[in-house]
Length: 291
Image (cartoon, rainbow, N blue to C red):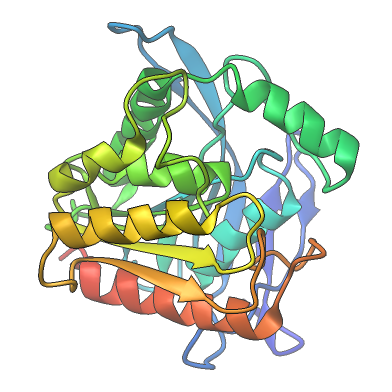
């Protein structure tokens, strides 16, 4: 469905009304596919170190008449929850031809979190981040991934994609070690060299166990990721993949934290455009479309 040169998004809200938006052009410059989007709930069962919960996810996918999907991608948010920008990322991916599920990371403390980018919002988001545990985050991502795989017309031979931003970027690196994840993009994930959510060894320790592709992005002017941490990330990626082709770091000159997001003061349009191009190529090369 096209309108004014762009796709109409049928976004069903809890009240049954429809919101209409237009995702940006695909990296190739072509008009993206029409998409459908709305809220989707799914359950996470109890397990060792895991409390059961329900995930209120944002589910975006190509419209029913848009043809065969290219695969599935999990979207992991910043500390601001499933706010309009994160939902737009899922919409963008759906416009590229992927089923995209944005997954809340604070389901047990703030299941409907939707914040702006002010100082008070940041403090609230960080307060929930500090209550997370890596075991539960991985259980949530795995449950979301299984649900997403089930929505594909046929299981993808390779697995799913995963993209995360800020805290979601950190969690995405943890999740890249899951067998069902084939291609991961981590944008400015902080704290990976010093620990992991809830305590424990540094997240960088999972890199030797990553079965698929992983692409990490760090702005060279990011105040939340010290230069030493970027260097340690680079060294850990190289140690886990000596070829430097499967696990890679992209250092982004002149970029700070949050440069991909149009709603943040640190947004850098040129760097963001390059990031979308890299993400598109990662998913294209790392995911085998369902047959």
